[in-house]
Each structure stands twice: as structure tokens, then as C-alpha cells.
Length: 256
Image (tube, rainbow, N blue to C red; front, top):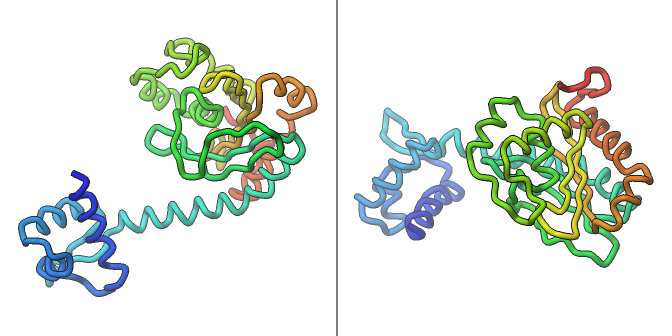
């Protein structure tokens, strides 16, 4: 299996150096594969949209699926660059760790992280995945999904990471309703005991939460941060990112 994956990526990487179309024979020769192995890999990549065949000469080139991945990466890079100063400002004001994240295939993926200037270390890295149902950013993105999409998500079991993790679907739906009503989500030691997180959505259109930002810190410190105005500051930061990134002002229409 691992060898097949490596070979499939090797085929795609051929087109980094060779911009022209390649025949099946040329692909097989370049990678020193027998023709039947090359055919199977090329056929799979074509079916998935990562390669496309020119019907006139039967040669292959990169497919539109690759372009969609490139565009997604470019867009995520724009999000990172544009939001970074806002994340830094929140982290500097409240002296805690701040993240931004998007959803990908039922998980959250961290786009960026600004470390706290305090002793606590949160083990997250840019580009890594995490659970949606027990992280602040994940719960935030789930809270603003259409009901049908939330129902689909809740067909899978909700894994308990701590004794605070919400695993009952009805209780989780109630938590999502509360998060929508107040405009933010919380991870109350649901992924790690001693760690609390507040997350807010960044809207690209009414009711459409495209990504989320969060601030995490030791549970003992978070009540003080909240009392100092953390949640209004985070909401205003998210609203400003909506305006900067999407030319959408959430204040004009409250997302449902």
C-alpha cells in the first residue's frame, strides 16, 4: 500500500519537471515501472481527477483536481497572512495561545498558531488535524452548520477524550444551539484536563462560518481573561476578519 502511494505521487511529480503531456509508456519508463503497474496507477489517478487524458493522442497531463488543491492552498495562505496580525494582537493582550483553523473531511485543521508568552505549552502544529466535537474551533464550526450537516456528523460516535467530553448526540445538539445563540463555542476541558478554550466563527456570508479563531489557556486563568473582555474582543476580531477577507459585515445581518 505504501509503495503504491509513493508511486502515485511520483507520477504526479513527473509533471513538475515535464510540462508536456506524457504517454503511459513514457511514465512507466521514467519511473522504471512495468506497464501494467503504471496503467493501474494512472487509471486510478485519472478516475480521481488528478490526471486527465488527451483523447486525441492518448497522453496524460495533470487534472483539475490538482488545481483545486493548489487553489485551496493559496487561499489558506491568504487566510494565514491576513489573520496573523489579529491573532498576535489577541495573544499579546491576553497572554494565551491563539489558533485559526478550518474544517477538512470531518476534522479541524490548524492554519496558524501564536504561542503564549507564558509557561504553558499547547501541543498543536500548523497543518495538523484534530477532533471537531471536543475542540473549541471544531465545536464553533459545527455550531454554524446547517442542521442536516450536523445530523450527518452525529451519525458517527463521539469519542471521549476526557470525562468532560460531550458524547451524547442530544446533549451535543443542545451545546451547538447554545453556541449559536451566544455567538461563540467553548471547550471546557473536553480534549485535555486543565485546558479551556474560547472560539469564535469568521463568517464569509450570513450564517456561513468559513473558519474559526480560538484562544486557549489554563482553566484557572480563563475566568479572569473572560472577565477582562476576552469574548467581545474575539467577536470584534472575527467581525473585522470577515470584513477584511470577505467584504462581509456580520453586524449588518446576524447569522442564524
